[in-house]
Image (cartoon, rainbow, N blue to C red):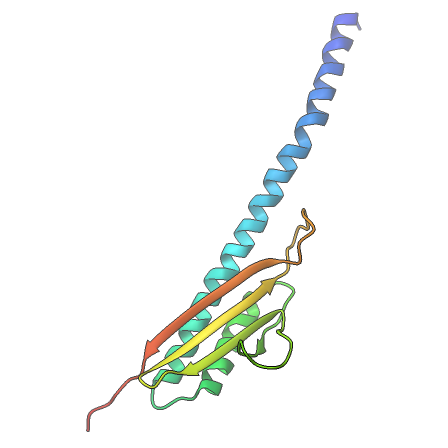
Length: 141
């Protein structure tokens, strides 16, 4: 093997050593963003389903919370939801579901933090928030 071939091989090894952490960071960041986007979409969909269930045929906020939690739980990675509303005296759980009867509408709100899959930065998680209000159905007799 000539000196030139060894020099080229050494240069290629140094270039790879410098480039692979950046490529790995981009790949892991893409995966994290995709999972967070999926969880955000699932939160919005679950909040909508919970609000719809409670808005139909005289449902209650408790029904809205129950439906929302059941629909959301399979979509979450490493966290579960708790029934809790902002302003309550207890400590806020990591991820919460709150339903309110607004009179003519039912509102479901989901908030909190979901854990990161790839802990690249010293963070406690990614913020997740969804709020949906659905008008109550009125049936004419």
